[in-house]
Image 1 (cartoon, rainbow, N blue to C red):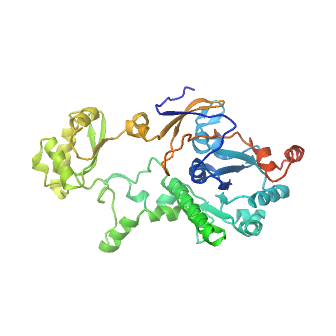
Image 2: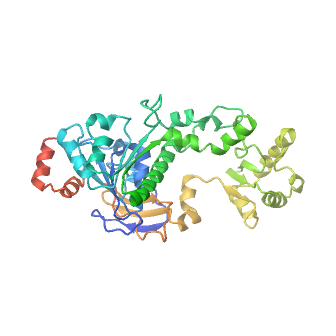
Image 3: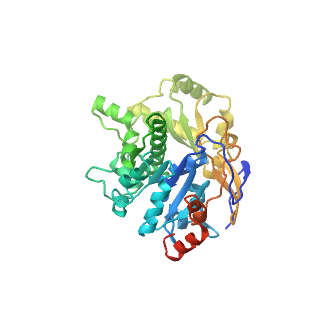
Amino acid sequence: MPLVRIGGCVDRVLRGGGSVSGPLDGVRVLDLTRLLPGGFATLLLADLGADVVKVEEPQKGDYIRWTPPLVGDVAAPHIALNRNKRSLTLNLKEPRGRDLLLALAGSFDVLVESFRPGVLDRLGVGRAELAEKNPRLVYCAITGYGQDGPRAAAAGHDADYIGYGGVLGINGPEDGPPVLPGVQIGDLGGGMSAVIAILAALLRRERTGGGAVCDISMLDTVVSWLSIHAAEFVATRNPPLREQMHLSGRYPCYRVYPAADGYLAVGALEPQFWSALCRALERPDFEGDAFATGERRAEVIGELEALFQTKTRSMWMETLAEVDACVAPVNDFAETFADEQVRARGMVVETELPGVGRWSHVGNPIRVDDPPASLVRRPPPELGEHTAEVLAEVGLGDSEVDELRRAGVV
């Protein structure tokens, strides 16, 4: 399978990893999560310098490892989420596996899990047992609906969280059905909420010395992102409707318009931007129609749609290059990752991955001081690659690890 080669800074990675100097250097994280939300959270932590040990089930591992597409034997989503991490296999259904997790927890700062509420309690490695072993541990649970409430134990995925949370219902065209977003809002938002909670808990621990329990619900995160919509609803008692909200295409000055070969995003909210755009389009008669409603809205939008379709996106961007009007092309993926601003900010990082070849990573958006000299210190780990290494840190020798392997504990 050919790899898409995208321009960006080059970062050669060796299997052994290397030292790091980052804002989270010295912070140790046990990652018991699977799939996207927890994987994204611990990716952010690992990129910032934390030592993240991914704890996986022997033989199977995180489901993300076999989620297509595959590059050789490696899943692309696994590559995306698991750089800079180590992998330890541990069977938590075995008593010795549970004992090893508790032993490890004694020397780690953070444990992140994404099981349904009560799963780790039933296995004997829940919050109480972990806190007894390490009172300073920051325990973070990422779930769909939280640790309590009538739906706490229910299964769910991103579509469910944004469905319950009111986000799905306001996405899509005015006269059509709700449309699923192209990115997982609840999953990624939940991962970022987890990182914020973990960092806040670590900061508090510096003052108090005590650990914390972080209860992160993806539904909670989705609802929290509706704060402005909710304020308008409380003020007016009018529920937000598709394409009728302020920033959803309701106004001529803020919507997506078709060009001859794609689409343009117009965000000319402020009067100076809209006026500049109207003059550049040679339609000064529209300057008073930024927020037109009713028949006038339909008229202005219709004429602008016809006008924008007379040129390609690149032609319009050339025409508007010197106009301060908040207009952008709606890029496809190849265009996004070739974009000069995206590349200048280090959001595309090329590496040489063992067993894979050249690979383009999406960078980390969090900058603390200067960007790191090396974003990718370790390639995504093979399943159980660091089992012996991590267990050696709690005193186990090679012969003991070999015996644990034969017994199916690791």
